[in-house]
Length: 204
Image (cartoon, rainbow, N blue to C red; front, side, top):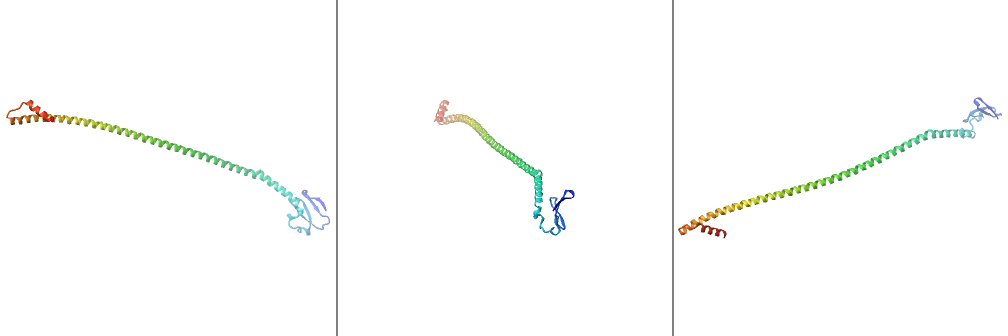
């Protein structure tokens, strides 16, 4: 077996006693000289034990490249997306908390305003009722005083009318009694005696 350097720095390994050879390139840039009759006798190339080192090298290179790609590009973007989502969720929760606090404050202010309005309405109703009661009482007292004054005036008028009527009745009674006594006895009685007799009769 001999080793020579071909073009572009590719090493070629050849078996000295092989009558004919077929060059098969590998993944590591190394060409192995395989006899023409045995070129396809090894089975599936990835399962060939001779290509394990190059496969491991390429696996390490691909893993390293994938790791660099994920760590430098994909993972930072995913981290940024997760951070943005976390910040957005936090902002939404904070905004929801503020809105909840504002709604609770508005509800409390509404309850306070409603309670204050009820108290004011109750106070106004009480004040109105008291005012109406006072006005009604004052009107009743004024009406009673007016009725009492009218009743007193009426009683005075009645008393004056009664007195005047009694005076007229006395005069009529004195005249009638004098005329009757004069007819009975044939002479006119003394006016003082007739008046005294009428006054005594009225008193009785």
